[in-house]
Image (cartoon, rainbow, N blue to C red; front, top):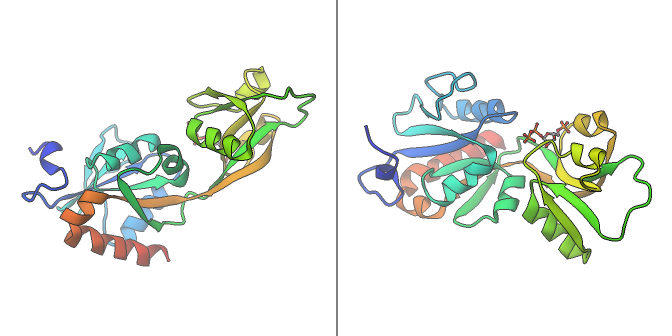
Length: 221
Ligand code: PRP
């Protein structure tokens, strides 16, 4: 069996393509788009603990990663392409890859949210988030000094428990905010899923990757 190293971009011997996608709420929409262009995983992804899946195209395989890791794998060229939320791309910084397509799936908003009844707030707020860079950039651009507290999930608990005054997080239906007595306060950025492509892979595997980008563009228009 070939190792991933043998599939790195620039390897003239290997013209196989690795596409990184993520489990979770966008997986089915991502698979639907791939299905439209004739790419289907050969095994059930959702219920599997595997991380790499062959497809009906013997030159394309899918790598299933945590959302935050898709950009990292594409940046380093282990995956040639990825489907990644704009929230993650913003947080990552976008080094090492292009973002040729908005796939128009996984639409949501990056928001500042807080308690419905915030009471009197101090001048310097504590902001809980897993999007540390995004939150820092947002407040820096506004010229507001805040203290950022890094969390890995369940951000809504932070204002309720007093850990932070506000959160920076993804809001889709708004159900999680409502269920926890929080309200959206400021829109930071509209988010959707983008196709990302490793810069070197686009050059070295152009004949394979460009038709894929074109086909995906047609399928998501
Ligand atoms: C996200 C986000 C919110 C929730 C918002 O979490 O962190 O908690 O979704 O969605 P809603 O507006 O539709 O309620 P997710 O479920 O993706 O889990 P995660 O925090 O582990 O990424």
